[in-house]
Length: 489
Image (cartoon, rainbow, N blue to C red; front, top):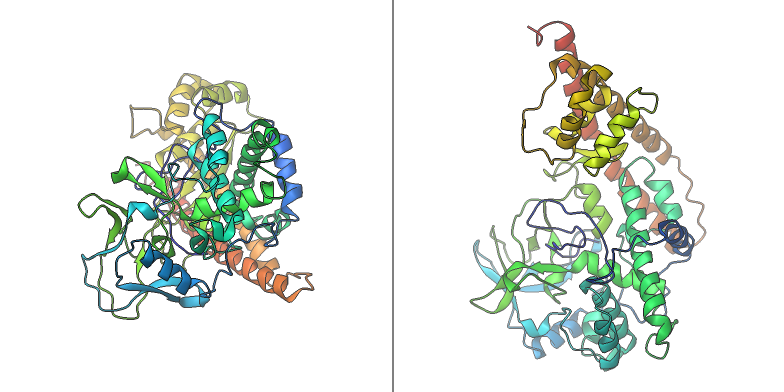
């Protein structure tokens, strides 16, 4: 799915954002600890229940991802509800997806959409079932779980909800990794680190649901019946939030679902974002290029890697188009290291662990990765520098940004190269196996899904492996020069 979001940045988790990446972290309430409660149980539950998760939920949820069946009703409702005349309209775009296309020539620098605040879904929106909203707010439920529950409540009311036309236009089964089964994640994404991120995100959402169920839903069964408020519907609702919420920095930092605006697709070649415009008192974006009539109009979901775009939105950009692409390289301390405990203590002091992942881009890798490599290969004689290396590896150090240890630099680079080549071999093995991978599916619908998911995984692995090959080339060149004495001199 490539439909819009986007620019969401909050203290809870990472979505397309104006700022550096934040960690995905769900919290139940403003006063309650973040939900990693009984994590092992939550992970196991999410694994078992994911196997049965499908588009066949108990709610009349949305439409097919490529469907225009509800587009006319959505546009009429929006117009009747205060959306001004538009220069864009919903249509099918490449690969059968939906998107907004120009209805007439649009110049660079034009403001578009002008969605009024009355059409935004926020934590302050009125509930069609006021008692449900009252109970949740009494328990200080934070914005994301609140909005997820709001969507379920409104969807269950069908035509009785003012949002029924919007909800019926939402994709019933997007391809974000939240909607992949555990077996699909294990099968298609075993070579890439995004698999673990997806499993952790599902576990966080499962833990959040378990806490809501235990503290609220189970105590008010007449308001939160199990056949409506369950893990399947909660995950579906959360998937919609993760792929469609917009962070409105000019509207006091509110997060909102913005009907119409969330039909915009992402392009790596544009840098324009949605935001609230105080002068027009509406959500707008300003085009950074011109569009001819019939052309698809784009925004940016943020500077995200291909893996992050797949995780939240269910698509991988065309090869070579995403200048912000990166691959997570896993690194680990060696348990056989005589200083293992001392190094691990230094890492833990700065919020790191014995195993860490760092992003590598075509243009290079961060200083933090190099610092971690230095720490890993450093001998006992450098124990006084362990603390400094660990601080730098966590980006907490404000000194020695040019951190270098010439006496162990060769070993550090070799350590990074070894890990790059280990990862490359995993990608090569998957890509070789994918050519003959038996989908073992009888249903034509599931067969099509399996083919599509496999292709997404292949596209992701090719892009990530290419970055690793580039890093491998650079590392080998530097090591060759060092060993020939050119850099030493």
